[in-house]
Length: 633
Ligand SMILES: Nc1ncnc2c1ncn2[C@@H]1O[C@H](COP(=O)(O)OP(=O)(O)O)[C@@H](O)[C@H]1O
Ligand SMILES: [Mg+2]
Image (cartoon, rainbow, N blue to C red; front, side):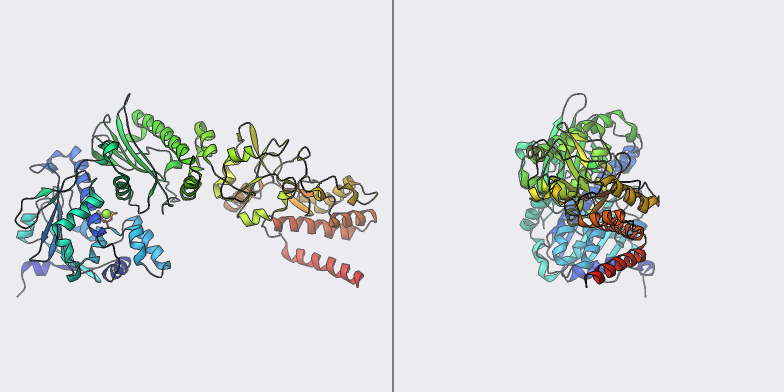
């Protein structure tokens, strides 16, 4: 005979990713299983935050039960650990959606990383897997939940295999859960240590002390007692807090698992008062390059969570995590109203200044900053073209890989190492450092020992399009316009323009250049003698105005535009160019044509491009080699 509840029980399969995740959890030999409690408490705290936010508009939701609390109840007889909250709760559909699919982006990142990893257990600690972590310690979980304001409580039940059940809650369950969520874990035999009150207390202190809602422990016959500080960490005095407190708060607020590279905790007083607790990560956050470029600073108003979408920092600081808690904003401010709120705008400005100032302090520790730069530098650099006002400040913070090669360097370091008479800061933009290092455009700079910044991030092509300088020295691309190194002494004497003797008699540069220009026709905008080259025969550069070569390439790829034509620069002392000169004086037009095309194509190849007519390139090369070697043999 079946009861009514039985007939209303429905089975749902887990989303495939969840099933996979659960297989890993169930068999986990992960040593830090205790983090499951942190995850459940963090969810309970979020649920209380969300209820408080919704109750601003609908105070009835709190009726009769306005003290939000998280309760932990170990029951040794039953072998169960219960984590309950009187927060927002979930209705039937929310139980299905939230506890049956992978919704959080952190878990998604975890899953994709898992596919690459041999042993997934090491990743659990790095990413956190939210609610599902509870299956590391429990072989059966029952979630009873009643959405605030809703009549019916529902039960979600699973043993962490392929499916879960949803049913209306029994009368007894419903009576226990007047609002919010109760999670009952049937602990695996080898995880009964989590029923010991002192163990629970230790875990809560370690990971969840900063949770602003009271966490109560109700053990056996004892009265419930509070086991956390239960005040928002950012409201506490700095002097009360340890590095460990900050680390745990960072991890919990940011859903991160690394150490903060930088912690900024202060209270602003004055026109507005607000508490600030911000962190910079030390490893690259997984969603740093999400196209939405969303920020991760949570806005609270007088301890009430409002949103993490208030754009409290500009997008180029979106790697920052944390909380800003305002005393002045109205509680009932809608998320939409925030966009145009002058108080928020003023906060954003002040916060941006503080964060950059703190990064400057961090930058004094070269090694620490190099690591941080690795984590978020590419995003910070977006400030170079987005934040006109603070451009110089961001530029001073920017770190570069350079031809010097020893780790990343600042422009201040670059300037300190300028060569005599060097008045510009040189850079080259391209796809990889190795490619750039092999680029002939570096040759003349190398001969003079001039340092060159090697820029390989996609954003580099964009910010370098702006006229920028540092300490009075303009930044100058080695693949754009004319460069003049003539005042900087040559270090390697064999490579300088002074090695004039190599030049054959009676050949006029202008005639050769004109001949190449005629041969290449529409493919180039100009041909000229190069200042950049010492060893290679030719290179392509962009004109002095308009986009640089790399930007040109990016634009062409994305917009399919043909772009502007490059300038071909020739190394007038190169043997190939001299042979070309000779062919020209002897009136061998075919050879002049082939050699010109060869110079153009190899310059393209050295820039990492494919010649527009590869078969023509091969045919010409073969022709020249066969003719040359036939004569030699
Ligand atoms: N105690 C709870 N009260 C209300 N909703 C909850 C609770 N626990 C979990 N949830 C819901 O389940 C979702 C999944 O939780 P979780 O796996 O920890 O991921 P995350 O917390 O990052 O979203 C939450 O986003 C929330 O919607
Ligand atoms: Mg969670």
